[in-house]
Image 1 (tube, rainbow, N blue to C red):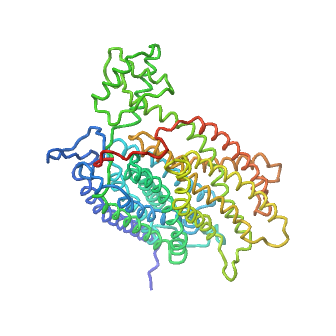
Image 2 (cartoon, helix red, strand yellow):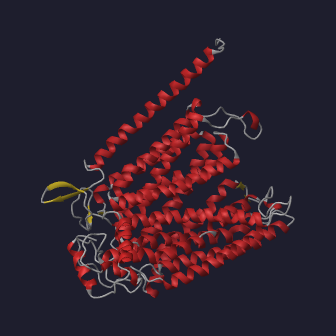
Image 3 (cartoon, rainbow, N blue to C red):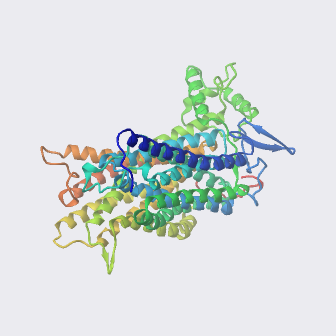
Length: 621
């Protein structure tokens, strides 16, 4: 029989339990961090944050920005050994492994926050939104580091273990009873349920954002590292590079498909500690596979801070605003070659005011005279900004249609014969459409269009993105009509009525998502590939925030007295989702027209047409 504890004895016992839990947690963290630290030292080869370059059998660590591609030890690459489809397979594996974890976590995290951490509806939704936004924001940090100081493969392997550590701590917290609130039914016993507080809340948010930091850094570098394995100036590898982005997107969908079936079931029926623990193991397994591929990668050597180079051009051009453009630009371009410019870009006629940064009026230094290559890199970035904004507006419809179509599915007859499809499983339907269409698009449609258009990708990046935006406008119109019919029918509508919406969602994900990713990666300057990829992920996140803002604006505008807004009903039957879909269609159409305007004015930095002559140099891309 347990003794009854009173007063100081009870406090002393609770304090002892808390200290024991914290000591256990500290030992666990150290056991996770020590092998990770040794793992980082092994991969960094003694030169953390610097680029290892071998010359004449002597190894030294260089902090200078040196162009070109090298292997993981700094040796010149060989086309037959490094890069290609073989190297990309290691990245496909990591893509599938991470999305087996991240997609179900994002869609099921609210359940964990409500059921285990006992957070409120608003608090749990805000936590998920902040987690998504933090992951996108952290991707900019990883992108900056990989473009400026360390290679992309090392960035993944240095910061990826943080995601493993984060999920490991979350699994530990879900497993140890003293690290989370006592179990209760939050729906029936709301007053008796204690929300996570104090030390346990600190542990939860620390683990969550540690995993977000690791995922953000990997997310920024993985597509760019994969694209580096193919030479866009070689006919065969240029086609393979386009296929890489298609199969990278397929890996995201396939990982999400498996995760939604297996990981969600595991977490809900076997326990969150098992689900989160397996998530940590999958992340670690993916990192080990990527590490095993190090001898086969083409690594682009960092070229220094790209943001500094852009700022230098803007500052020098402003200082030289009163000078007239003349032949002195040729002298500035020659001086840039002497300073070791990695890839000399020819002068273009757009944004001519920036050319004044190349005027040599006797002063030397990076903040007094810029090379033509620096100026052209800045022009590329500025030309892409209107498309960044317009495509973000055009993408707003996607998260709205996706979210509400799944909710519509929950209100329909979800029986397919003897099989009952649960609402959570409905997310699998658009993902399945996407996987099937990606395979068909890459294997059949692209080769067919390539022969007729002369473009290496079948169509240009911007055309592909535009098709996705147009499909979302059409999906909004069809969704409005179907929702009106669902509300008017006396008999419960079949799930099959939503097939056109799911199909168009798949078309959008096959075209706009990989199209935007490939556009930002291929058009960005060589030293800004990872930053461009991070901006793509930020664009997706900002589009989701704009979608939330649109819902709030419509609700506020349609709210009258005690009568709620269009989307504030207790269920879809009491809401006006059909009218809201028409608003989404109008917003999507305006965004599509705006996108077409900027896309028509854009001049490609990389020629999208098929290259007639293969690359002469076979040893480097």
